[in-house]
Length: 284
Image (cartoon, rainbow, N blue to C red; front, side, top):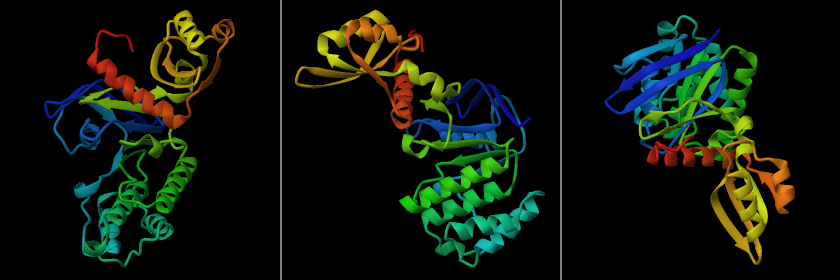
């Protein structure tokens, strides 16, 4: 089975991964710029020295921005070079991906835009057909239609490769919505365990009702308010509950409850990771 395991890993005196154990699936790695996402991916790919232990199936990485290195003078030459480096590299598949993304394999590497270089890096990583793929901010520099097309190709690749493990990093929740089921938050170099979105959703209710009723519901459930707005006498509170928010609480307090969509939930998980880092004694 495809796996990626890290135990007591430190890197560059800043990154710290107490324990991370991933099996096949699609994971979103999220945190603000400078949090340590790129350092983690480069460490897993073997590009940075570490202390600790990393146990992983064969890995391919798509770097981002200035880290992207293309071989040869054209995209086609880059793909041929990748074929020599990686035994399983599928040149035809890479060309098919790039054609679908609007990148001509005859293009000169020096003429490629930032977004096009990003697409070549992603196609190279997918065409390596390794059990583990690491995509570092793959949507950087892409317009909306191209971003959508890349998402479709990633989903299609995953569907055709059941035992595939993908870690995709971003600093924006919208990049992960509809693409991953689990997220790994990173804050100030600390990498947290993966969180399943569906299992966490009941912990993040949105309560609507009179201010007094909402306050009563929060108290009954021992929940913490995260964000509050009001319109006239009606209050709307995004909250965090240590247990799945109990339905009988809303009935008793005369409030209605809804739950965050994936984008809002991912943002809340990132915010909570930040707050937990500020107050390490608080149970997360």
